[in-house]
Image 1 (cartoon, rainbow, N blue to C red):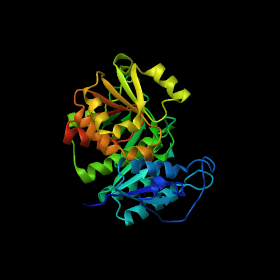
Image 2: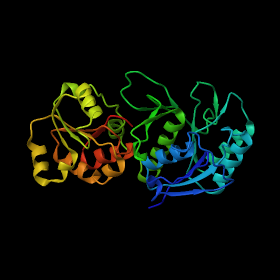
Image 3: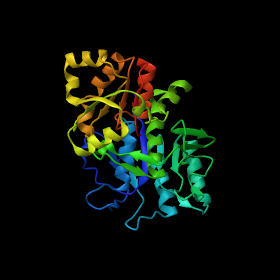
Image 4: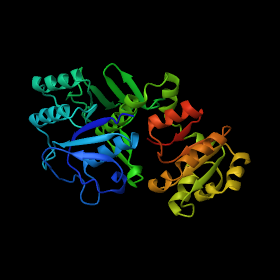
Length: 330
């Protein structure tokens, strides 16, 4: 199977978190280490690359740092970076950045050159609504979060643009049960999803729409929920369950490994199995077990508080096993 190569123009990064340990990432060009958030957090490139890998852990990423310590990128650096990635024969170029308001023909020319080489350029629009390049070029796929209220689906394709119903993206996979905000992160998510399409092929419309349907969390109050948690005695967990969920029972998540308990889950009287575990690396070990339980619990719904599955992975699961595992956030 061909490995999709995703080129990324962004800040530099350290990539020392355990999430990156088994990921294929290389850095070319002049190193420009700068940490946007201080030593306790991640650089912008680390967040962007992690989001791409979360959607497609099997791709390879080539990072070309173009954003310096002043947190700005010159148009010449952007052009040079795109050309460098064209020379590396990447399949996708992720641009979680852009030039506001000012048009440069040289920039459009190099983007057209990438398109002619069969490369998808996926580029973020500015968060402030300004005209942004390369996102506004016809040869690129622009990404924008519209902040739509009551949108049924997370993503919509309109002409050369992809719109998300909001600009929040989870970084649960970095052991942070938090959301980051901005078109740059939505752009990275789209690049990861597109890389899956390139390697695995198209999906039927009904399958894809099922995967990207926004979860209506109000159902958690309307239906009876059995909750599996890794911290059921914590004060904040109890508060969340009390305020958000119509729970009939709260149990330890690790009970799910017991075959007798699995049988209990199949026959117990409830509507939704709600799983709330705060540690991604812990949960990854149980992914296949959760999927197998979803197959067995055809008459019940499984909802994950934090996103364990990528969007294409979720669609694949529905296509192959006729199973939907809902996630409160993306």
